[in-house]
Image (cartoon, helix red, strand yellow):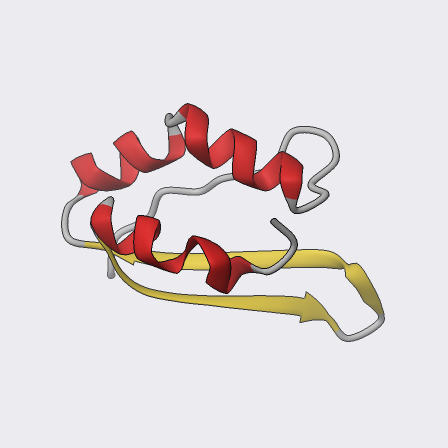
Length: 73
């Protein structure tokens, strides 16, 4: 899987209600994926899923990604 949209239906089934993917202007290998979730618990289940790790590996993610859980201020 090389494109994030290929995972779209699965993301929605895991509680994702909004998402976007960004690349750094000076380094296309520096990618940020942003997701909004229905609940913080669904976000935690999503980031802990083996399927997400498989998809990221298939997309070429190298190393351990930085993942932040945040809430609106």
